[in-house]
Image (tube, rainbow, N blue to C red):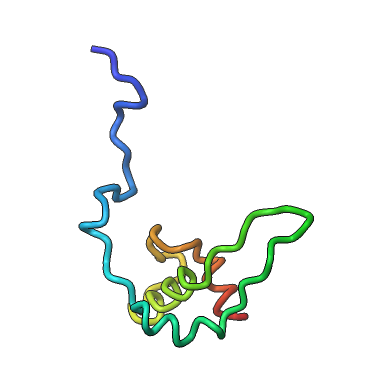
Length: 90
């Protein structure tokens, strides 16, 4: 029996869909109240990677504050721990 890499099970990521995704900490009404506080700068003419939307970073920061976990334990559904930490410092 030949096993290819495409048939090999992926480990480490939960890919079951939205049934297992937790509800966000902020609903749309709450986000609209504080949306003005977060700047969303235009992309640089020099190029580079686009910025992560501020709502996703705020959700990651709230997860760390509520759970009391370390930054490196931030789940993969949020942006990287370094990105969320930098946005918290800003």
